Structures are given as C-alpha cells and as structure tokens.
Length: 271
Ligand SMILES: Nc1nc2c(ncn2[C@@H]2O[C@H](COP(=O)(O)OP(=O)(O)OP(=O)(O)O)[C@@H](O)[C@H]2O)c(=O)[nH]1
Ligand SMILES: [Mg+2]
View 1 (tube, rainbow, N blue to C red):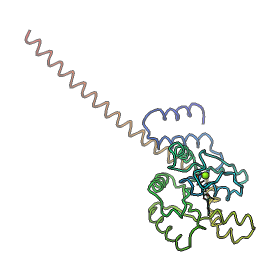
View 2 (view 1 turned 180 degrees about the vertical axis):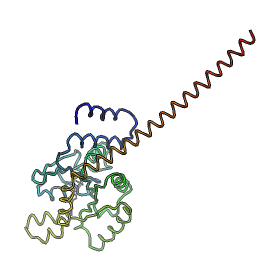
View 3 (view 1 turned 30 degrees about the vertical axis):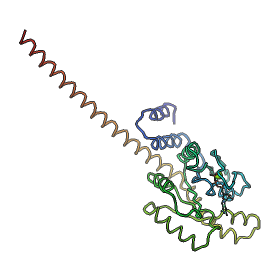
View 4 (view 1 turned 60 degrees about the vertical axis):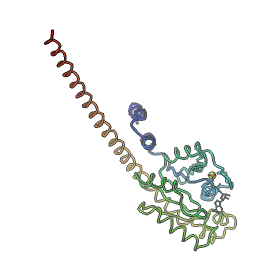
C-alpha cells in the first residue's frame, strides 16, 4: 500500500464515525493491506487461568516459553513465531480480570487470522461475556473456534454434560469445538507413550490448523473484502444522514429568511 492510501485509510480513524469495534476492523484492514504475506496469526484468548499459556507450551513443545501459574499470570501479549510452519502464535492476558489486560487482549484479537477461545471445562458452561465475545467475533468473518481445556480433570460423563450445555449456548454460530488436555500432551512428551498424545485431543487439531494455514491467503482476501464493504456501508449511511441534516438546515434557513422578509414588508407598509 502506498503512503498516500495509508494516510487516507488512517484518516478514517479520526472521523468519529466508527465505533470502537469498527475501528478494530479498520486497523485489521490496514494491517492486511500493508503486509499481506506476513505469517498466519493465531491468537489464543479467553479468561484468566483457563490454560491458554499451558496449551501453547504443549502445542509448541516448549518448556515454559509462555509463563504458567495457578493464578492470574500473563499480563502482556506475547508472540512466538514458528518459522517452520509459518505461523505466529499469540498468547494474551486473561479477559475480565483487569481492564488494561482485557484491552491488550482485545487489541491482539483484532489482528488475528484464527482465533482460539480457551475455556476450562471444570468451570462449567461459558459465562455471558465469553458468549458475547464469541458472537461478536464470529459475526463478520468465520475464523474462530472454541478450545475446551483441562479435560483430564473430568470424567467422560461430566465432560459430555458441559459440552452439551456449551453447544446449546453457541447454537446458531456454526463454531467448531475441540477438547484438549495440555497435561496429557506434556505426559506424552515426557514418556513418549503415544496413548497420552491420543488422549490429549491434540491429534484432532493438527489438520484443522493446517487447513486454516493453507487457506489463509483466500481467507485474508475475503476478510479484506468483507471489512471494506462493511466500512463502506457505514460511511455511505453517514453521508446520507449528513445530507439529510444539510437539507434540514437549508430548509430552516429558507423558512427563517422568508419570515424576516415578511416582517420587513410589514414594517415598510407601516412607515
Ligand atoms: N490438569 C490440568 N491443568 C492445566 C491444564 N492446562 C492448564 N492447567 C493448569 O491451569 C493453571 C492455569 O494455566 P495457565 O496456562 O497459566 O492459564 P492462562 O489461561 O494462561 O492464565 P492467565 O495467563 O492468567 O490468563 C495452571 O496451574 C496450569 O498448570 C490441563 O490441561 N490440565
Ligand atoms: Mg497465560
């Protein structure tokens, strides 16, 4: 993108026309046009302590690259670039624990090719904010899925019950749901016993991530098109609204000047 076009697009930010969410889409649009070939960005987000960083460490086979603890831990967005797969993985601070943390996570979510919401099944069904987030993010472009974590902490029966409740909560979203245990995957790494890997749920994720990566170029083109169309629609309706207001002001002015003229004629008659 040349600097003139970038200036024009950036200037849209200052128009006061777009709501915060749309400003996020605009930022994404600028990023996509500016650097269309950057590696696929997968953003892992969700509430704190649900297992985001643990999942990333296990998936990337890293020992504590992303810091893990049983309290609120990640407070900054952190990236890892997997150059072999050409994928950048992004860990985010937990949502809803702290306003600044939440904002950082939301900002990271804006520039994602694939969004993975992590939800710990031992906390039961999704809470209202998680549902709101999933609905918001799947409204424009289909690029997110739900990852249920820590399944090793529940019986198969309990897990089925939680899954059924969650499926009900996200009905109509056409969103894929996966269940994993990062602990089982770590056990596979420690022991080399493939049974742990099979129980971890990671196997099912591999083809999904690959598929996303292989269709990234097509997805990005579609995303550019969708965002541009949405923003254009907003701008057009803003123009129509402004034209209407100008028309009303003109009409008011005309009414006022004919009233003044009438008054003048009345006065002149009396002189
Ligand atoms: N049993 C079990 N425990 C897990 C699993 N995944 C994460 N945990 C534990 O859950 C706690 C939170 O894990 P984190 O990975 O730090 O969670 P997070 O979502 O990154 O949390 P924040 O960084 O605070 O947002 C830690 O005590 C982990 O050891 C899992 O698959 N099984
Ligand atoms: Mg973390």
